[in-house]
Image (cartoon, rainbow, N blue to C red; front, side, top):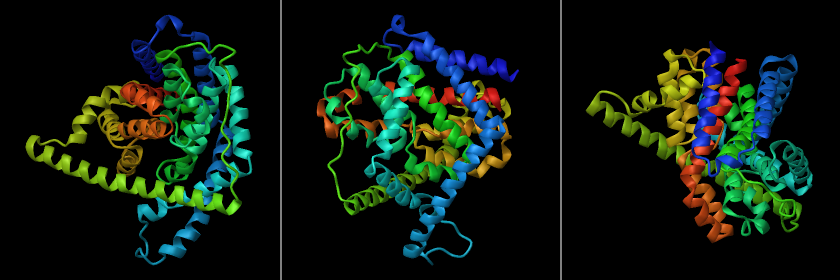
Length: 393
């Protein structure tokens, strides 16, 4: 039965993408089918094989060790601020982002990260039927972040047509930055975080290929990655330390605002209607959770968490999930966890449009115009990744 629901869900997601397509006749189905097969194989390897478990354990151990190192710095500055036995979210989850940001900066400065991004991007371009720029951007978004990625392609940004710009922005919204993966792993099981990272990369190309199909001519398939001005090692360290701290502060501020606002709205709805706002959203999103493979008994609660992620952000939804995860089956928990690992929410529209506008005002306005369609596509990517996982759990 789970396979029938998963196949129906897969067809619905592809159908919804086709419904919003700019040009249905241009859709190339061969690379789409190939990428779906690759997603199924990779999710089965990561979640159902000894090799996958060893690989994920290795990745999780690396991030755990990084979080330990980050804890040394956090403890030195903020040691004693919390009572014994307490684990403040800002200190334990957000501030380690600073250290991971520094590591990304070091690998960037050593030219290791650009080499990896170009290499994997070139391989992906042979699979997804898209250009080298789109493939590079998908990898770079996951490595350096949804805002910073546009800086690396700023020379080409102003010359891109709207259809290629959409694909670049869709990749940025569908993935997550490596700098905050460690934070996710403190709230979700690492195996689901790693699986989501891989699936979303291909999912972004699948949905974009349907919603926004086009052909890149050979003379247009040029990748021109901007190299940052060579900084001294310690200049680079200072910059990435401050960037990581800004991310931690911004996420913390957004959490304070969104969690408080959600609590207030829930209370008002409960007083007036006898049901919370999240419960209402849960009923609306329950059918989506069901086609993702969530049992109907869990669908309303799962739908509420999914909706929370869409209207606020993934951190708020993950916090809500940790409160009730013990009441979910392992299958439900895995499906919802994979859905949550992406930047697909309303606030990301402003973040991406602002990042592009800072480099090209004209292109920033273009992104703002197709912002809702961007969110629509990125949400379908999250649903698609969750459905793929439902096949193997």
